[in-house]
Length: 123
Image 1 (cartoon, rainbow, N blue to C red):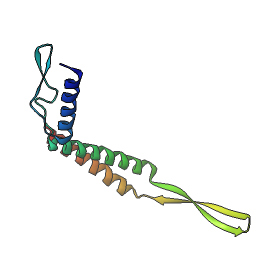
Image 2: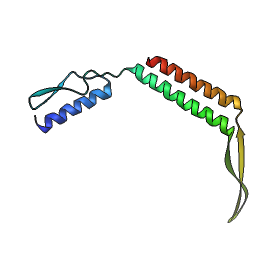
Image 3: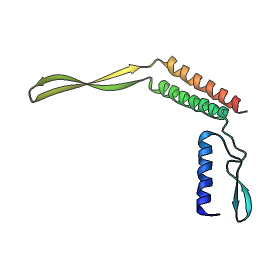
Image 4: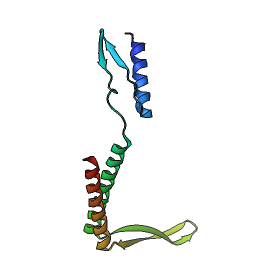
């Protein structure tokens, strides 16, 4: 089998992986037929949905924990005070946005619920 045949086979497998459809081809090495890496595998959209629900649950739970611990966030805003010719003066205002603990608790509970749903879909 030449290098060109192997690269053509590899390109076909990569293309089929991108489309989600796998060919039932076999790779021949030294006269032995080996199952291709695509054989027996399929891209089931349910698995990806389960993973996205689980990841969303983890993200929501972590954000809920941060909201409970920090109870808000702050940011700095620059405001021009004086702008006369070459003289510029600005003032930095630090503002705090409070987050009620109920927001953090709801995010944590929502994340936990999504984790449970993701675990049930897996089983």
